[in-house]
Length: 362
Ligand SMILES: *Cc1c(COP(=O)(O)O)cnc(C)c1O
Image (cartoon, rainbow, N blue to C red):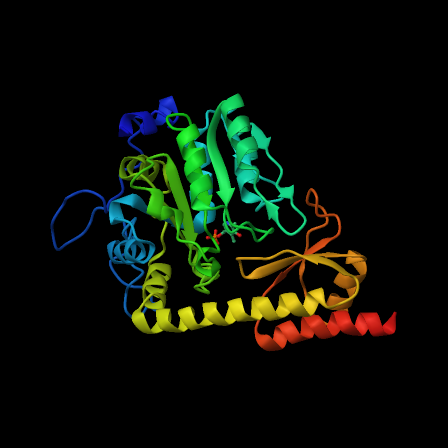
């Protein structure tokens, strides 16, 4: 596999694009920095003065730490403002507006379609298939659809939001092989920490046209810091860097993220992931036992997708008890479904109590 064929997936007009040359990116050395029109003094509210200067576009310590965490090299990793920014960046850099398509598997996380729409990239939707006990991606149909259109990007969400299913690595490999030289297969692992199978980053050394999205927003509890990662071929990462905003990672966010990935924080995060998985099992059994619950799909994320005989009634009962869940009824195939995030044990008890009380009242 040669990188030449991978870089040919980048929009022709961007392949030689140099992007913005930031004040921090050149190899200049000095102790008086008067090249970026920054203030000579710190803001009075910024005691340590850490915010006075523009930040490193890709804070090196954080990048190294994330690469270590996700099992890749630093050169294969791009930090973005959430993985949302990475999705947008991929669509903008690879899809020629009006021509190059994006494949998605609805019902699924909405940002792939939003970014495609903003870029005027045709959207090819390959619905998940309901096997009764699981709502899963139809990999043969994904491959066929991608080969049929001018597809540049295939977004595979694993674990799937909202369906909860994972795509086996062997299936992801199958897509990558079929689309070699034609499209990039992006595996969104926003919930990878809750899943039972290894990350698709373990496939990167064998398939240059696989990319993986990770985030600190979910299991790492840092949604407001907006730190997401794109992991892909190093040459592709370089191209995408040139298309990204000049200073995408605010210094206070980078600092918080680095602290949040320190040994102590990480040990606590790991315990919480185990707790959420146990609560997921408990909430699932609790829900299944309630009349009026038609189906609860098995989930490898920190949420459960459930079908109700009366989804409106269930939604209202939860809301009346002060519990806000995600109404999925506008999504294809999910006209009777709600997505419930796994909370603390107390919060999950409130979900069950509210749905139970509704039954007693009925
Ligand atoms: C929440 C979520 C994201 C967004 O993550 P950020 O890093 O916060 O932008 C991406 N993909 C999926 C599937 C998600 O559910």
